[in-house]
Length: 431
Ligand code: GDP
Ligand code: IMO
Ligand code: MG
Image (cartoon, rainbow, N blue to C red; front, side, top):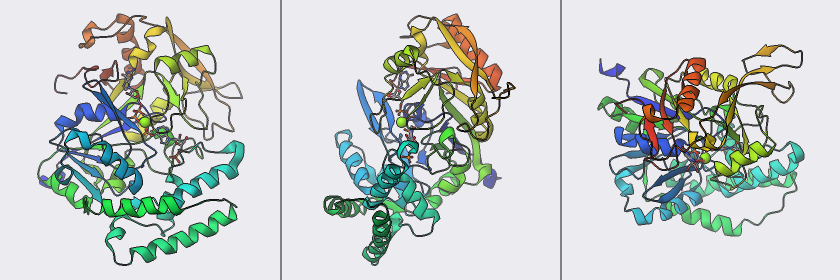
């Protein structure tokens, strides 16, 4: 029966973001007609590499370089028009037909310049306990959405947009005064209104219809996650999280896709862990090993340039994310970064303050200290360059992958061995 067609796959991060989502969406995109972002905003930085060039996307879905893909910025996204304009201008050399290939939901939330100021003011007021936000205005914009006072992309087409903007601005100014936060809005407001005019020339639609019509027409859709499951507003290490639902559940509300339309969930993770910003990170390595990982993996933020904190793979955290998302296929990224290590540690359990062991995520990792318990595996200690078949990979890497599959109970479909599109080893002949 056509209404039961399952046409939506999801690709999302299982750790604290920056797992390599952009790269794999670009790799998988030729198999889909539609690529759709369902949450987050310009806090995301998704890197793609091909033909010797690197591209970082923030709000535009990572299918944009594939001529046959329609890209949708869904209603669950918070969109900054100024950053959007810059992104589009940066794509000018690529001859992309945005009128055919890009749609933006009228119900997506609009980030206005004072949202960024509020983000900065809130972070400053928290001092040592700041979230480490990307300062893109994400938290304040989602707060306005949930507080039922935000602006949406579709509002820019309304005759009363200026009034709606001024009303929200007046509220924001009061809060900024409370924070005693000094600012000068002139330049950013000018850029904002220019960018809003620019935005009007794009396809602004009720994208829930676009997507459901695509499903009805038998087209395949890939929902592209931003951030990672451990930054989810409900299940992440609250309050050190982002402000959206980064898990599978966010796809239904962030695109208007009913749960029974969802087929595969690709869960993507690094062969180790990184985190940018504040908050608990049980396997963090504050020593030379962590520094070597950071240098070898070039672990510096794609959006803010901040050094990423690094540590060994955390299986209790990975199991948790797989459970929450209903992951059907795993994708292991950055295996090549571990080439430099003779031995690889994997956290199998946490030891709690009372001495007991658990493989579940404690309620609050800030209050409850969880000491990682490690299993040591032999490293492969050799280059992976040029390998295209899993069967040709070093035995120790195959064992690492098999061990993770056994622990998690989900197959690893891809192993990524470098930033380029082509450095991707598939274990499924159909993909
Ligand atoms: P995203 O936010 O999940 O899309 O990930 P980011 O783009 O923020 O960060 C991933 C980084 O790792 C980018 O610089 C990618 O170019 C790079 N990358 C992706 N896959 C691999 C890989 O398999 N090996 C290496 N060495 N780098 C990779
Ligand atoms: P992608 O999509 C890694 C982190 C920030 C901060 C916390 C809250 O590239 O994986 P926010 O600006 O959302 O209020 O910040 O979340 N964060 C990310 N970390 N990758 C991201 O996106 C992130 N987006 C937000 O560093 O700790
Ligand atoms: Mg990123």
